[in-house]
Image (cartoon, rainbow, N blue to C red; front, side, top):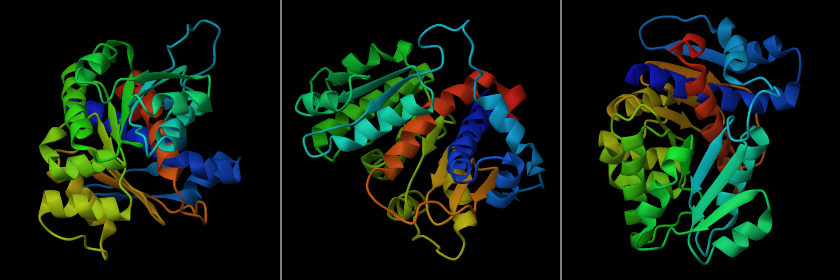
Length: 296
């Protein structure tokens, strides 16, 4: 089951990165796929012509038979006095991709600001509470995925609470997407997500280098990005790693997928938060679709 869950989560990462290429080109979608992706397999060659079908399998169809919440209830853990925009971007992108409900678990100071950005977000001012872990844990049965890190900051008390939230999420089998200062926490304590196949890490170049040194005990090898992402995923127990850059590199420890499609010429704050929020809902969709539809 763990292997299948990992493959499904990796499939969600494929769809998330693919969405940028689709937004640029539109139909025909098969042309976008051929232009955007190539596959580097660790042990065997796999036909990537099935990627379009993967997208169709993962993204749910619209139907009047569904009820509110069925297509995704996503939680974002982050948001402090200094950083209120990042959790908003992550939470709102989950809604725009197709989630039904989006929660933000932030500090008390950040909550009114984040809430003022959008009436669509459900904001919980609990992250700096002594009971933060319990307060978030009681919501976990109602959430399909957590996005951990946008706007989190590095306050020791907040990070300690997030450690407890991650442990509770793993115990319940909740998929977690980890970005920003959530990745900084993982670099300090890699055991927090070791072997958890429902985890997705989304490091940029600097964050990836920090993780590489912490986990592999060696600086980043800039000449072999594909191998570096594969090795990091394997060392962490085959969690999915989405290494952002000029070419996005994705690995679940078994295969490496490279998106060569050029994205935005800008590299500004907030872009990674959009990706992490999108990945949260896509991870839920992929796991719900099941191994028969995600190839895992």
